[in-house]
Length: 490
Image (cartoon, rainbow, N blue to C red):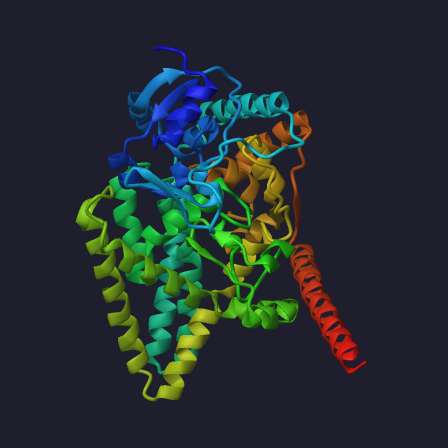
């Protein structure tokens, strides 16, 4: 296989090729597979011109990795000097030409030169090599083996108990009690849906996907297909204001002053405007945070159903074909048939509304837990030079909790280890985290962790800091208006 130099790679990318570096080889991703990629095309496009070795190994099984090699077209020198992925600045190649969705720019094609960085390429390469050695230790320790009996056994019993309590309370007309236990069931089921979405249960794509539709769509009313694409991007470009959908919550929340400039989102493919509505909410976000979290599940419905509507037009090309989309649609309809029947059976619209709100509000601690792991961490863009392990440790933190209540967090309070090894069975994260902490110490990287209360305090502090900047902007604007008026009067 011939050696391909960076200039030649850049030229081929500008010509429209989707090229990614993995294990010292240059992979050319054909358009058909880009469209069929189970994790979504955007997950690949974010690594065009970059070395994605660590990301590809973290997200794919050995069987899939064997298939990846067939896309190799050349060798490259390593450590690879990364290029800037076109999609990061809004560029899309379609119909043999480039267009920019982010803004009108005075250029007809993307600039692939990465922005200046303070990071040392050799140091990042050392982090990557150490991470690969760590990954091998985790594999050798058998931590990818799913503990079906000891892990999922108690959880299934918990699911049955919560469902039974909800049904029994409903039959006794204790509707709010029933709603409470139903909310707890949804809260707990999300963790298993999460595992299945990562293909971390049976490690078989078809089996895990079918089970995930049962859990997420049929019982929870949420699209697992939407969650997979959303969550994969979150893992790959964690805490990047323009790219990570898990921190893009305008007009309600902004965790960085960057959002005050109406930034473009590569995930939503639109500009997130910091308009009057956003100014109003963000200025009060530290006071409204927990209220917003109470309604977090409704936002998941909106995103889920928008995704399914959009996928109706291209699902034939994606892996799973029409059956995956059809099953999801059936699952959503099934959910609203049984949940709608439960609401109707409450006897009055007031009780039905209370049932709806209580069952959904009970899941809010889950939303709070998720944001604790990222909202207070760095949102800086260090460019494509940053290695996978460096990025995950910089943008993610654990939530410390006692083993006796770890089930409340579903084991996902160990977010640092999960972000480094997303396919790792959730019940093995604690054992793996010991090895990850050793790795971080040896590499001079910070392994962040704090308690639930401290985490909430830090997040509220971040939200208040951004809110105060919004208020300051308002005062400055008012002062400028007064000054102009006074000059006109004078």
